[in-house]
Image 1 (cartoon, rainbow over the protein chains, first blue to last red):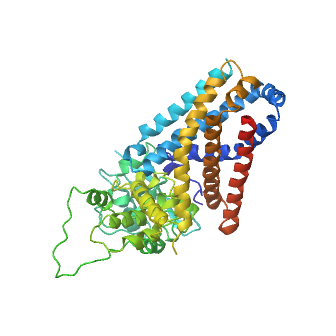
Image 2 (image 1 turned 180 degrees about the horizontal axis):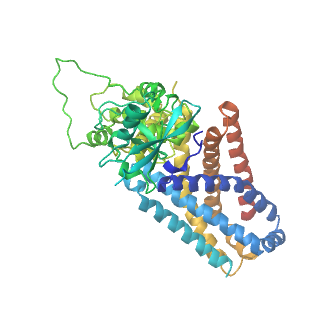
Image 3 (image 1 turned 90 degrees about the vertical axis):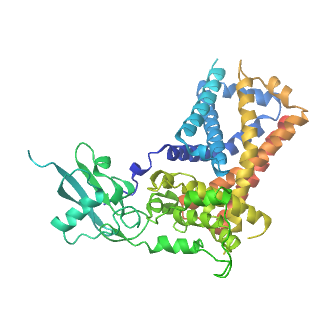
Length: 118
Length: 240
Length: 112
């Protein structure tokens, strides 16, 4: 049988950019209601918010937060590329543009990581 | 010195089938189509495949070579065969396989028709020639997409086609974009209506697999982006 | 038949994306700045309480994301599952309304 998923024609940079954009988008969309709900619960007063922040200062939660910041940053840079491409900018299709977007996203994630664990 | 041999695995069957390996002697400047023709002429007369011009004009010989869609008459074996001398040749994806390496391209061309990929004339033979400035934005946009040979490589490469069988696909949409930029054409609005939405240009996720694999270096991704803007604007204004 | 809905959803998602690009950039910068030296409830509420600028910015942010995310999820579900049609469109719309409700609740809570 021919394999139903064949990765050999999909190894190019733009396909990776699509995968990053889709996976980060789904993760962020699922996280959003939780984010809003948790904030909504925590702001019943400064005390409740303080308790929430104490919980959020655990290393594991900080690591998860960093992951979300990274996903958000990558979705931002990838999204800017898609907007530019659909506006007709041929340069947005280039491999270098894709790599630059990923690099900026990773840098933002790293900045948050250094701040949150400082 | 013994002749250098290639191990060529060729898809035999239709939707159900298997790869059959053939030993083909390696030659200088050999194309993938030469491999298939050698097998059909010397080893397996029952092998079905399609080709016509052999010079990259007719668009009939596209196949999946080592997992990537390619025009086989202009693909040198040296470019695709590894050091192990293996080549895998299968039919194109996203279309029904009739037999072996021959696909049914009817759904592909039906979509050109659905995308209004036909020129709609507005003048008669008694009218003067329509002046089209070569440097105009429209003419250049049309130029960028007009060399399409209809080989279906892009259609075979596109995952949106695989996920959404109603999707018109890169070639039909690229054709629609070239006609949208043709000042002599009289069906611009009807064409934008035909290509808008979830089965048309707005389903494209810019994977760029079409652009990546197009043997004519056309960028259907950019053409589709143009259609997205033009048809969404028309939908917003209520023109379509 | 012309698919006006699909075309307009595409436009709405791109317009909200442009808005979000700005919001997310500010949000990321704020987070990286605020997180230095740890967060405290007093520090956060000091920034948010009674600030009309803050309220307007995050209110818009919530509205933009409530347009953006459901359209994306709808497209993905159409491609990856057999779910299509009116029920999916309504579910996506409902998800957007839920995001507006939860999001504005959190924003107003931090403002008051």
